[in-house]
Image (cartoon, rainbow, N blue to C red; front, side, top):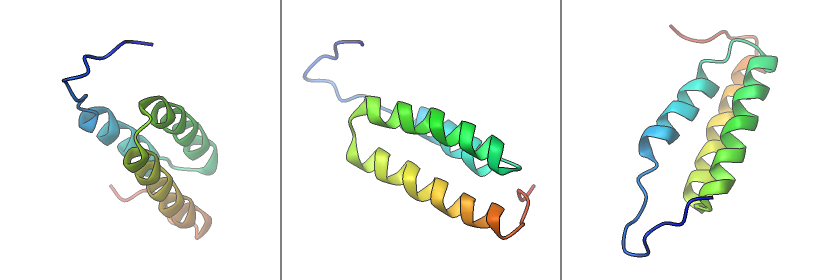
Length: 74
């Protein structure tokens, strides 16, 4: 765990975008599960409720697409 400067907010946007891309790029539920687990662990480590909610939403939407049998859009 890194100790952050109290005066400096951490910019998670790049990592967040990467995690979202991994979830959205999952071709099947196995890949989706791995991407979501990794993203979920990371999100909880940030302690940022917006990030946690965002990851959950992205993952939920992708799971619905996979369940409906739609593969990733290229």
